[in-house]
Length: 349
Ligand code: 4SX
Ligand code: FE2
Image (tube, rainbow, N blue to C red; front, side, top):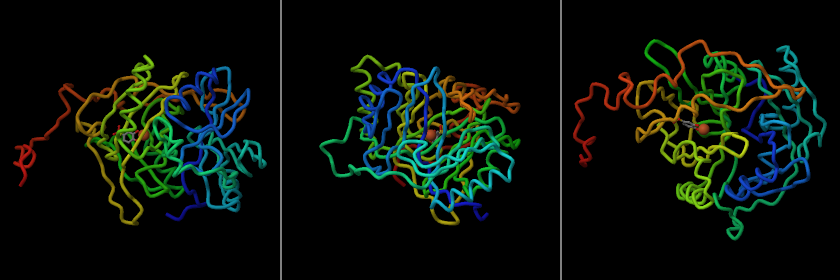
């Protein structure tokens, strides 16, 4: 599939939060993101390997919500191609002149066919890249934004839409009857830029930041304990089945879900094999078989339309994955009819 315009990767997320000071304590104080700029109504943050102005914009708002998910495209010409593409689809669009978001050049925001506010931009102000400023690396040593995860009722439909933008599928979760519960797609050569979680939508499920090492994730947990904020930890730390990444999910002071993620694999070759997981495989979402808490399946952030009004939800009609819990639901397995070969007993073969 040739792409109608060239998306490089995830660029930044714009989140509305109700208390900027509380958010700053979390994103800067706990995670260790850097503040590029702040004023009374917004904070712009980035990870230590990022040289673009920001990968996260927090805006003060009346309620917690997603303002936009922004992808970076290859050039300003590609911004124009994206504008034409969404005009032709009949989507609502907003052309944003350079500076409409501080630090970002000419861009277009669209209300995409799935109901999400999505931006495409190329130009952005450059700031210092702190790669070797080890003296500054913050608590979680966050390197960069890694991916977005959205909740949408019809995963195959959403997957088709993203494949139409030139994204490729790396992994999915399905059952033998053909129901698709979730799907992971990428432009940059990692497991994903965007994941689709089946559920009532449009809602934002999470945004994920990368760190280099597992121990940074454990350190975040220890610090949260020390701050008596262990209730910010929603799921993990653990090892994902899908993606094989080491992970942790936190809820920020407004309930937005943030994942810290490290060590997935390279997907850039044209014949990168698709990995399909059975929804009944106990190790699909947590390689160690730990249960997924119901809130992780069921809760997500509101998303705003281009007028700043919350979008109403469309219900998922197909089976929800939350009804196929990891653990003793009578349907899931760790070894599907498997006699347990010797290497699986822990012996070297
Ligand atoms: O829970 S899963 O193991 O399916 C998973 C969730 C894998 C990768 C992710 O980034 C994620 O959010
Ligand atoms: Fe994720």
